Image (cartoon, rainbow, N blue to C red; front, side, top):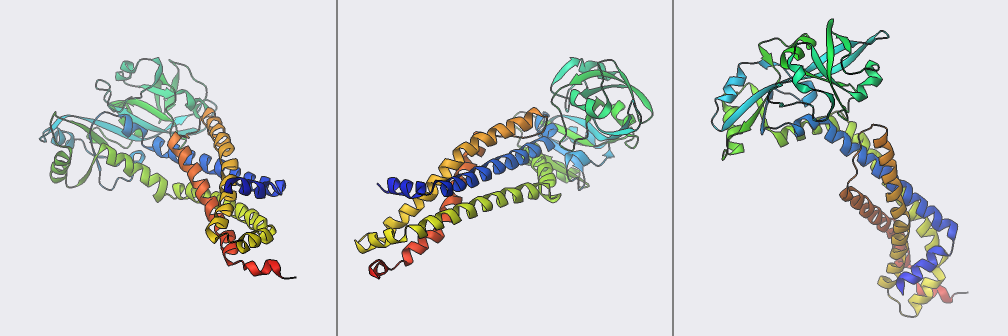
Length: 376
């Protein structure tokens, strides 16, 4: 009964109700796109950490994120290997280089050097070539998406990086950096030569795996005690550390979240104005209901249902359009993630925002004096 009255009131002015629905739909679409990009970029920033085997990461002191590792003496690799509870340890070299574009000019690349035999830190989606070939000096792997930055290439092509000629021995697909700087994967020695600033006695990361039955927290504590000049993280912590840096310390994530909040605020204001106008238009009816003994709770529920109907009518198509928008973003190679949980959270937020938007109108009905209905 209450829902039917609320629907009748909402549809009394179709254009006003349509404006409310459009406001909610717009807000939901924008929130889904922004949150999808936010989550996608966050995951992308730590993808190599997340996909690499190993339980512990040893990094240079005050390393803010995976992309900007600080070199430290390679001898610490052996310190990690001799720590109780560590089954194995491998090094990872991450740095930057310059590629000479075939048409002229230079393009920056992010170098990831890994132990070819163990594959720790290796690319995970190879579509052409063989990663074993990277053990040959001067062989590298590039992602197909890098063609936009380095020029079209094929397996076996040569390129010049930091004055050295390298050959593309493997091609990957779907391994992109959220910084838009392409990855180039290589062996440890080739990666050191391509950066020009990481020497043969230095490394950038040490990744370690635990022995069966070893306690992760205890091993991390032991490594921190043995390597007080370095930072030690478990894999999940270093992943969060990297995501937190890019999403919050750089202000990037704050921008996405602020846009989402503004979208919700805009939708709330639109719904609030429409509900308030509809409430004002039906004040005589509410006054009559009060005079007949209807309580504030019942009348407030009618107003509340109007807001919920607007949220549902705009939120459901908004979720559909937002999903299609995120899929379109993914099709263009941009990082965006959309999960069922994210859709549910966004839809629930739209309903809560609509309820908040109705509070002013509910307060107006509660203050209504029933005697006003009988005044001339």
